[in-house]
Length: 138
Image (spheres, rainbow, N blue to C red):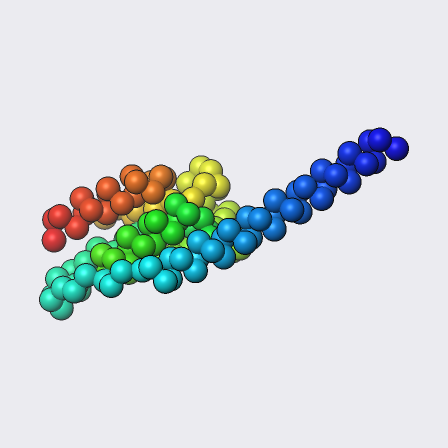
């Protein structure tokens, strides 16, 4: 009897924590939309050059992950149009991230090199630093 009560308590706790994470996710997304800065304005030629560079990247992310929001805010502010791939709800993207990237962790930047080699970069600060470095060359 006691084991049944403990199991039910754990199940309730699991659903409660899932609900808390859902609420926090909605708050994070809402705050992101409300406090988002305006994108950088560039001349057309420079923006087209940056858009061409951005095509070699894709960002694997979860919609409500705070570290993913941090990277998306950076992308928005710097006017970087990088493909966003939902690694939580899209099973194909999730599987690619696990098989090719090596783990189911986000944010993760997929970098396609000119020699067709693919590099996977994890950690929001590392992703932002890498993209900043790429922008310096433009």
